[in-house]
Amino acid sequence: MPIFIRMEKEIFLAAKILWNYHLMHQPLQPAECILALGSHDLRVADRAAELFHQNMAPLVIMSGGLGNLTKELWKEKEADLFAKRAVSLGVPEENILIENRSTNTGENIRFTRDLLASKGMDPESFILVQKPYMERRTFATFKKQWPGKGFSVTSPQISFEDYPSQEIPVERVINIMVGDLQRIIEYPAKGFQIPQEVPEAVMDAFHVLIRSGFDKHLIREDR
Image 1 (cartoon, helix red, strand yellow):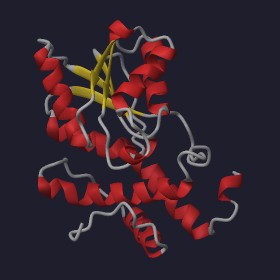
Image 2: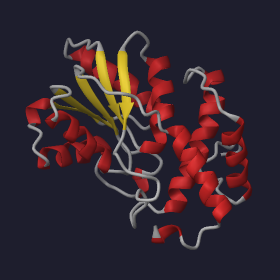
Image 3: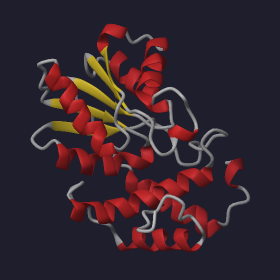
Image 4: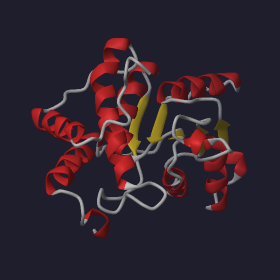
């Protein structure tokens, strides 16, 4: 894991604790739809295409406009890029729906629901595909925003050590994991998500990382 050689052991271990907490490790069953939530990571689209070819669902929905991260990286909307990636991996265009207006996880779900309703569709089961370190928040958000549906959450099958890349550096990954944990803690009170238990060891790791300067993705009242 050469990318971590210069990282302090305490920071690495704290980041690994958060990574493992965010992962849900849910078993997957065939569903009516695969819903890929847009982001800066095209490997999410790769995972959606992989599941389609495994006959896990006949329909793939790509959801995402330009969010806080991607509006600075890309000119094309997340869902459109995800769809192109899936087509390049052999998913037929007629098996893909695109929702490209959403800018956050809640909108991914609400706007996808609206898109399906506009087509007279009301699926009962979903496989949600997200980045590994956003599985738990996606789970909690979907449960709140679209109750009554059967679903499971998955992500690209990549370890923490192998996940960072030149395009997605480890510092960004850790900042996002810290920010997402804060949202898991605070968003239920705002009505955005269902509550999730946060073990003491996870909270300790959270505070270690904030003290170490990984606070770039935190919600701040003055922003």
